[in-house]
Amino acid sequence: MIDPLDFLSMTFTPVEIDVWLNHQASANSQAPLRVHGALNHLRQLFTFTDWKETAYTAKHNEIVRVDPGVSGAFTVTLPAIIQGFASWVGFKRWTSGTNVLTIARTGADFINTGGNSSIEFNDVAGGLLLVNGGEASSGWYEWLKWDGT
Image 1 (cartoon, helix red, strand yellow):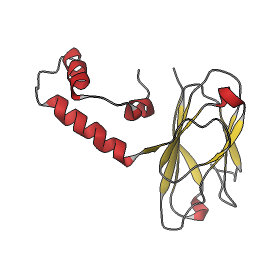
Image 2: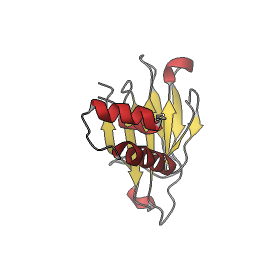
Image 3: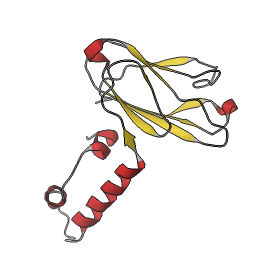
Image 4: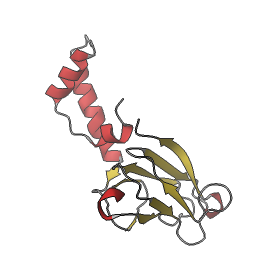
């Protein structure tokens, strides 16, 4: 199974997509162009960071690619929640190892129920999507999480 965030960050040519679709027994000759256009459109909706190996402050609506296996454990700080602006931050972890990635709040914003100031993300090759409702009282919540298997 391909990881959803890996899939969106890949670059495909129409020929590669055509081969893939033919492999999937697609009989529609128009499909490769439509899929290629759709993937490019999706990539415009997401901002992918370079691989982060040290402390970083995330931005709203970006996917932070992290590799704590290179320089050791580190922290990514979430952006402050902006009143009236719902947003998300995605994380894609890469590395096998035991180094911890800590995701921390900004200011009084909390993470998940109970007012957590931080969480640890240790799923090797996994992904995590945190969302907020655009109100400081809503906090950041784990909306989607998957492991690398």
